Image 1 (cartoon, rainbow, N blue to C red):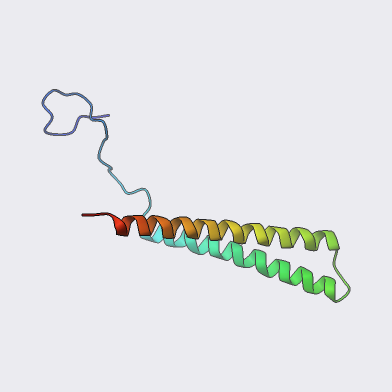
Image 2 (image 1 turned 120 degrees about the vertical axis):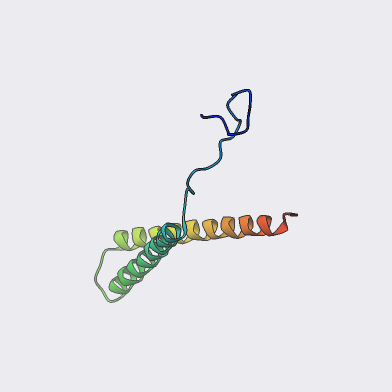
Length: 96
């Protein structure tokens, strides 16, 4: 680490200032859109497989796997959403 300007002893700082943001707006937005699309595709696939099974085609095992995959992706999406909302609420409660 390089010393922060203004320190006279040359000791390395405990925390170095960030040079570049880790996530910027467009990258975050595209990642969020991609995640939502994955959840939607899993739901649509499960629906299509269930419909196929109900009309006499398809494989029960594949339908069960598609339904479970859709359920897991939705649960993960909900947990991520809850964490984001919780973090936002924490930031809003901070005293300035």
